[in-house]
Length: 170
Image (cartoon, rainbow, N blue to C red; front, side, top):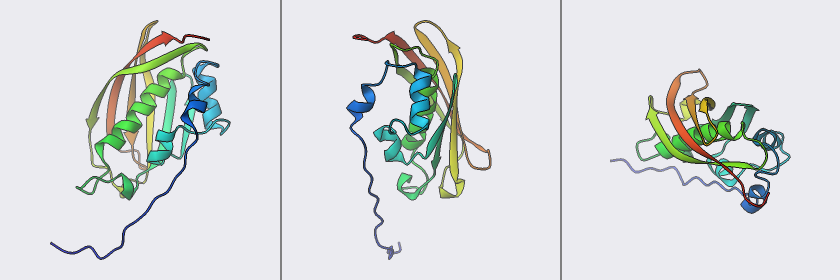
């Protein structure tokens, strides 16, 4: 076993009050809210800032989240932790469902079925995670998400079922 001589790395970030963002949910369509997020009119939620997401692309029924793979995502094996990958997959799938919802409607994830295909490291570069709708009904929606590296190689994919509901007090 070798001693690691390199000093510790640090990372600092800040985030907005999540209640301010949450208060906007349901006041516009999901697509309009995600477009406002994309355009910087509302701040990214804390989880996207925590993982270091750098942007999103939005259209109705499809959302893509971008994030460079970083050392601070690593597990003890020297690869990006599966929980970080699952977070990206869940975000892309859930936001894709959100992009189809009218004002006054919310959603929550019921499940996330994830398959890890290849290891993800800093050499993977900028990750692109794209969600798309498989099926959308009145009460549930099923979306899929695919995570690829900067060369377009599939790294992981997932499906998610979301419960759709009316928001109270709108």
